[in-house]
Length: 297
Image 1 (cartoon, helix red, strand yellow):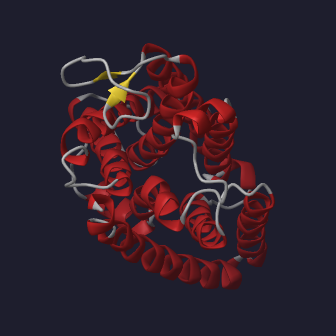
Image 2 (tube, rainbow, N blue to C red):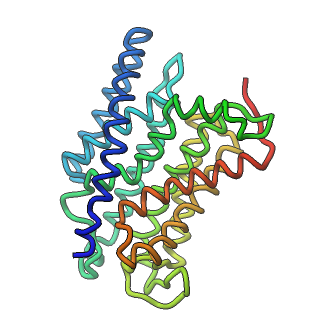
């Protein structure tokens, strides 16, 4: 009953993410079609192909797959440069997030079903996809990128693409880390402990963490950060470490929100996930604002 009362939060996230991501995708597709049609064709085609694969694997509902296609295309357009190479965009990062989440969700499914914590066999919903990937797609748009670069938020040596890519990559790293830590913890972690008081809890309890799950989450965040660092900026070490730090902070913040606001019925899981990706990006931005970092160009 309590979850139904706050289901509006998932709808609000969808209304915030999908129309903006779709409008941005259409604008970018039109622009690239007039400048270099192959970029528009490849970006839309590969995003659609990923959505079809997700549907074929029954990893998401049709609405969720559509949401994923829109967000993937938006992120790919945001990171595309000419000459265009699909593997030098955010596309490999999104694919990595999907593979990690899919594998972790399927691992030990029978045990999770016995515990009553398994994901629905229909796959993820549109709200879940928007909550996990939506903030990164909004942050990656050229409008936000230009604002970040012009805001003088960063130290004098830092210009695009590190300040632009790090918070986006941190948000994606958090999305993977959160799912992997939760799913792995349920299988190998035993009884979790609530992050705020370390009291023992049942598997699947909001705000519960395990050593195994936490370590798995850190590894997942590191994998996403590494893939992103190589895909977006040729393996830049600072991009990797800042993104990793943001991702780890974000998924621990997710547990904190789960142990407090979610357990009290003030936030649902989609809202927690969306805010956690935002916290990951904010933490990465804070790091970039206070440390000297390399520039480009």
